[in-house]
Amino acid sequence: MISVNDIDVFITAGGKSSRMGQDKGLMKIAGKPMILHLAEMLERNHYPFTVIANDQAYHKTGFKVTGDLIPGKGPMGALFTAIHYAERSFILLLGCDHPFLPETVITRLLASAEENIITVTHFGNSIHPLQAIYPVSLKNKVDECIRNDRLKMKSLILESPHRKVETDDLALTFPEGFINFNEPKDLLRWQTIR
Figure 1 (cartoon, helix red, strand yellow):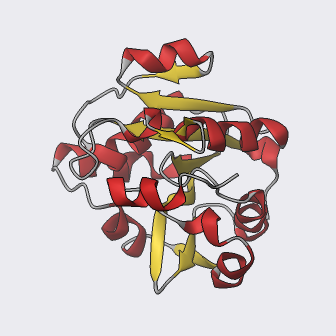
Figure 2 (cartoon, helix red, strand yellow):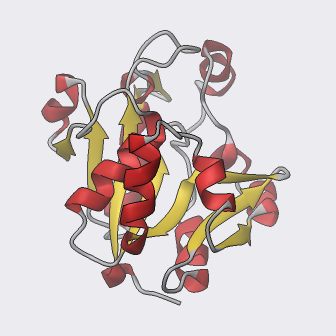
């Protein structure tokens, strides 16, 4: 178990989504940009965070923002950037496309995390790399992945010591919290939430 004082929180806002056709984090859902829902949850629960984004529009949000150190490397590039800027021993990496993620997911991850182990949520028969805690001690391994263009986050996790945190029960209680907004139809379906 680790505490909130052991983590640096990063939201990866990515870039132009091939399926959405534009930057997902800035698209509006339930009346405001997608990233704002997640950011407000973090602020309510006193989790300071940094947004990793290359679009200058994010600087207008008032959030702490940094660009990818090596653009075009997807979530692995975001992890590389987060490790570079981390001031604590662990990184909580979240994707902006789960805007209604319940805070309970974070508390479960913290309760299961420990030194030198990746702690990742597991629901719907899959692990979710952008709901995970990564130890900064992975730095050399992530550097190697970037150098060799091995960018699959799931491969990094499965090839490293890791722990899966089951969240299927939370998906029943907070179904909107586990919707991954990837396509325009997802926005249409959930545009009236909250």
